[in-house]
Length: 475
Length: 99
Ligand code: HEM
Ligand code: HEM
Image (cartoon, rainbow over all chains, first blue to last red; front, side, top):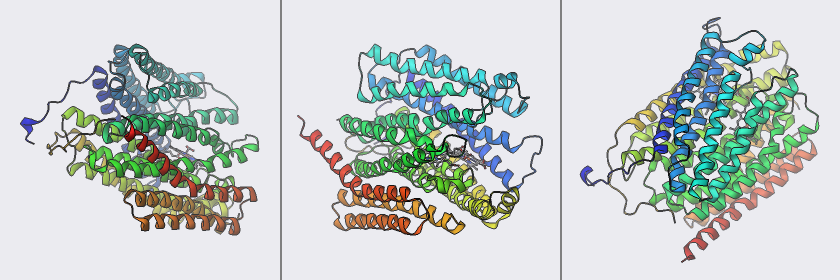
């Protein structure tokens, strides 16, 4: 098909334009996150680097807080993208949403500047309000945390308000609306300043765990359901039936899987049993998802008109299974976790699970948006493969290197050395650990190259390939 | 748990889920392309998963409760792929037979 005979891209809803802005911000922050990931990795090779100018902890805060923010932005973008399509009308509260986007960006910039320039403060209320709350992943000072609640409330209003105004409710929207309640409520956990470390961690895990292993899983499940209908033409009845089952299973095992974070923070001993039991169940629904992915991939392989999105969806299903299922299960029983806790082994799982479960999924949505914006009937070609290949290779290489390094720490530093300071130092000098750190850096650079290829492919104007006979239509 | 047992137990736990995933993937691919050999390879993966669970039960120093849980979950692995497949097929079948 020549470019001239291409169907013109249909006009976008305002909320879809806003979604594009969210995707742009998300992908830019993804880059910032990678820069600070590489910097954090470099400290392991050159420990005195930037001493007293920019310490490891600040770099790591930037890396992981930006991770949470860019994924949130991508989720919001994905929902704004699909909302009008799902409900057949412009999003309610679009003006407020447009304003909050800029508020969000300015707040992120201010917090980043505070982290980089001020870095830390005295143990005072002022520090909590204006510099750093000191809780991993959600270090943002209180004013910014309040801002995030406001943004999430506007977002919730957009979703619920659109359903109300459209007088229409689909199964996917029910799941999403119900999910918004815990999504916002557990974030409120980021506020109290409890002086007891155990209770503080107890509630902080509610936020981190309930986000990444429950509410985010449900949200990405809804987003993937919408993508599957869009990209593969899977019928609504199928994706919805599957979504209900997945949500039940993920929440069934995931909520009390929280216990695997309560092993060593001073909580009662029964958490050892609860945490071990429920998290041992967590791989079961993931296994079902693998079968579902094979089924969908096979059934719709020839019908997809968006190859990159298709491959990223498949990577999401497999990555979630391997990163969360296999990597998580390896160290989830208390007898093993006693040794692996807080080593690079955990870091390995954290990277793989976040990447598999969320990053792959949101990249798929970005490709859906790209196809729609450019009006290309068939998104294929070679360039996207570079991003896909390098990002996956970089991630797999990094997590393997981290796994070996972490196992060396658990083996030499904990099991043999008995967790003394001397044993920690010895383990850090161990060849396995050191090689792991070099290999992680190397694969980190591969990952960064993959990011560059991804951005290039998302931004470049596409060569138009011939359309397939019939684009998939949701049944 | 002694140092060697730590690594051995963790590796066996990881391999257990990996073999389960292999079963799911191969079983699905076999059913998809009607290739009984792939389905059988998938079933072999499940046997491997079960053998790993037995090994965990026999060789590792985990408490008996955890061993039972692992054996039970290996048994549940056996039914997940065929049950999921049947469920998906039924949904698709229903869908196609709708007017
Ligand atoms: C170039 C790529 C990357 C490099 C070099 C890198 C490096 C690092 C480093 C050095 C740390 C600190 C670990 C420690 O405390 O010892 C870290 C933590 C973390 N990174 Fe990355 N990272 C990269 C990409 C990513 C990506 C793509 C994700 C998510 C999808 C991610 C998620 C995380 C998480 C969740 C943590 C905290 C883990 C924990 O403390 O257990 N990183 N990363
Ligand atoms: C999408 C799903 C998941 C994500 C994104 C995820 C992410 C993470 C991250 C980032 C950490 C490090 C937390 C920290 O200390 O900073 C972690 C810890 C942990 N995860 Fe997951 N996880 C997921 C699923 C699972 C599953 C299914 C299991 C078990 C089968 C599991 C077991 C664990 C355990 C035991 C720890 C604690 C490690 C330690 O003690 O150091 N996770 N997870």
